[in-house]
Length: 124
Image (cartoon, rainbow, N blue to C red; front, side, top):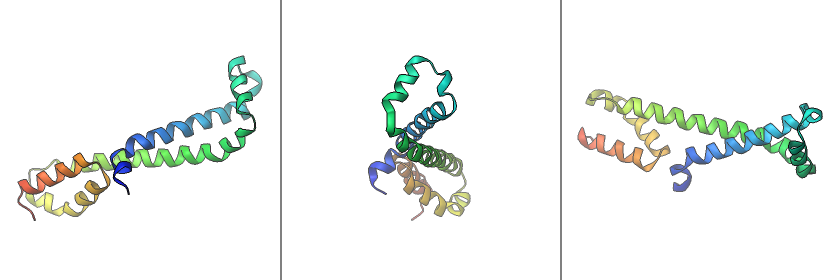
């Protein structure tokens, strides 16, 4: 995974999630509530026009993909913080492989925190 996408994975996935949510919102409006919409929303849907087909395809994909990646990133950050919050060298060594893997997928600051803790416990 390129460095840029690793550093900004949470931000990028939240943008993808929001774009997918907006597309899904307009799909719901178009196919569920088109007859009761206010004027300005009908104008937006008319502006979208035939591009709604792309929204049908891309909206759910972006919503699910961005949502999965966003919540996976949050889960990995939480797990990393939980595993790093130890004063025991034995616990750190037991979780070393998983911490190293999480540090690789997370940001540079997470990797730096991991390396500092590793050096603190004098692990090579």
